[in-house]
Image (cartoon, rainbow, N blue to C red; front, side):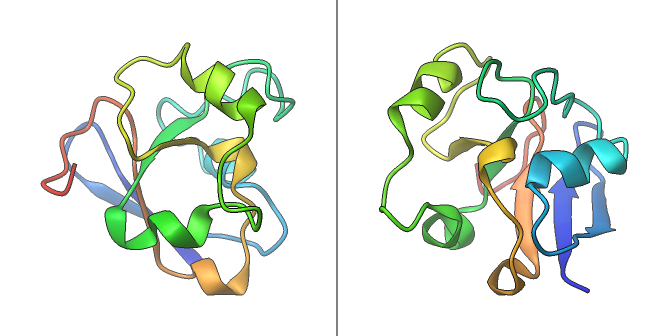
Length: 113
């Protein structure tokens, strides 16, 4: 099964199984990941699933259209600690090619951010 590596606020990395077809937000909530709340259930009505994407993975998590939607950009504008590598995890759908995906929780301080 594919896996995702989440860099945590406390400096640790939590690796979780990531079923194909689920959103990264659903995977984070299922694994009680700190600061991934998914308050809106993935309907693009909040920013409580905000994550940072490792630069090596950025292009791979982008939609087929090549850019995030205006709706996601609008919600990201509400997120705290926004970076150029911020995404809403509800908009990243797990697939085989994302096995090993590296993300960071806002408030964490990975050396690649």
